[in-house]
Length: 133
Image 1 (cartoon, rainbow, N blue to C red):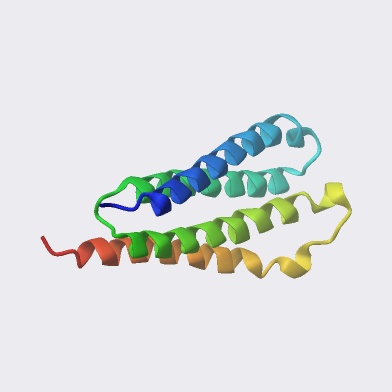
Image 2: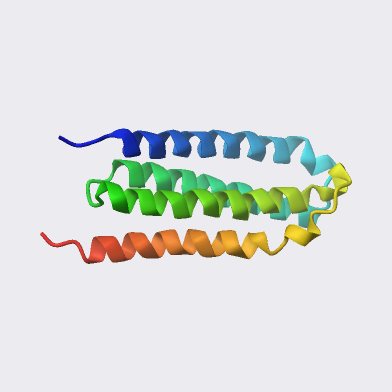
């Protein structure tokens, strides 16, 4: 019998990431558009775009029969931390003029998050490529 606990966790995370990305995208397009510089707004939108893409990626990972539970868990962790680090740091950096808090010292987190996201895609490729039928 297949244990659906991991698939449920991945799908719920995908739904949360997707929901938050849509809300932040709308917030950026309407409220932040008036108060952020064009450069900061583009950065913010980049965070939203990557979060939304990886919400869909996680949705696929949760539903695909091509991966076993351990492989799904591995990709889930890489993707989740990747989104939090990449998009989360971009949101903070892009809005620091509004919050008055200097988030520049955490700028190193953004490429770390990007590397985690890239790693998740590489792991997916390797796991499916090595799959024997």
